[in-house]
Length: 213
Ligand SMILES: O=C[C@H](O)[C@H](O)[C@H](O)COP(=O)(O)O
Image 1 (cartoon, helix red, strand yellow):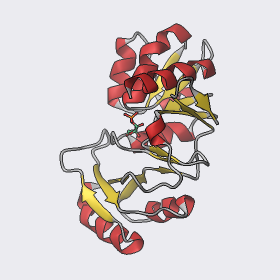
Image 2 (spheres, protein in one colour; image 1 turned 180 degrees about the vertical axis):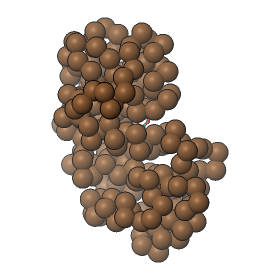
Image 3 (cartoon, helix red, strand yellow; image 1 turned 45 degrees about the vertical axis):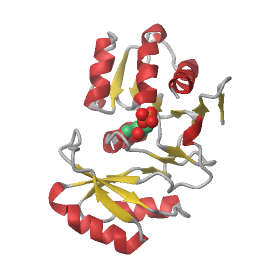
Image 4 (cartoon, rainbow, N blue to C red; image 1 turned 135 degrees about the horizontal axis):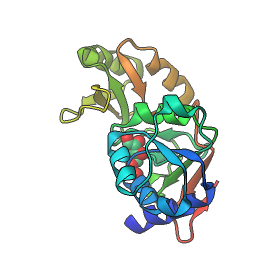
């Protein structure tokens, strides 16, 4: 899978303009993108996680505060699953909340994936939900009742925001936009890893050769 991730990451460079400030996501696919990014001569990047910020700095790329940059022309990130309408499940690396913020602040979202991430319908991979710690059980009970899925606490993880993660297993997601809105409404939810109301604008699949839609 490393080669496929590398190919998708390399293809994303074609979307990057020199001198711009871009948003950069989190994960093993994006790590390849960051490694190739110095050649693109960008002015700086907004990071979606501390992990990404450290990798950007190590490659000599300035990490900027989103509050100081305004709207970004481009956001590049990976995904855990992607459907034909470019709706995504994200958060396998627990970075979903900052990813959603940086995606929302960007004009164009280019998603880079290996072929295993393509699905006809979302739900096969567990759906991550970031919660305020004291609300963990309340949110878990509410999601179980609302969806029939099984929330499992990712016990060894604290997010960059001090939140905890529930992974909801066994979902059949027929209406991703509606589910995203419904879970967002639950008291104690910080964010849900469904990117349906703001899907990717382009998905690049790291086949040989890479292709996109
Ligand atoms: O929180 C993590 C992110 O949503 C990642 O973009 C996602 O999990 C995909 O990661 P990877 O490229 O390592 O499969």
